[in-house]
Image (cartoon, rainbow, N blue to C red):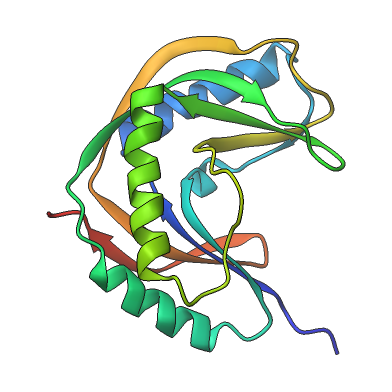
Length: 177
């Protein structure tokens, strides 16, 4: 018997109008056949704020993540999505929406705070690049594609358990500092 893996991460979610605007961008890319690939369901659109790894039994990690998140004190902030880019992937190229540099800095601050609070947990290493994944594409884009800026207010972050191709929100914490 193979045990189900649980991919755990903290995430932030754009507000519904921003999600709708991003969904229209993705639909346009699909309709114009700019890229082909496996497209992310709009219900799963998010920006990962801290990756916590894959776990067969996530019980202990979830408890530690809850305790760490409760320590984070951050104020709500705005982010602006302004372009589509692709990353080099192992088999497919992630096609993502990127933010302005100022927005990246705000998200990176939350990433650092979550990392400091969860320092005893396994998680991501290396450079953090804030993004929202639209698809896993068949090829790389030749250059970034500018989009009409999409501005959204980030008022909370959540602990997500991704399993069975679904993102389950376990807990949300408001940004209130």
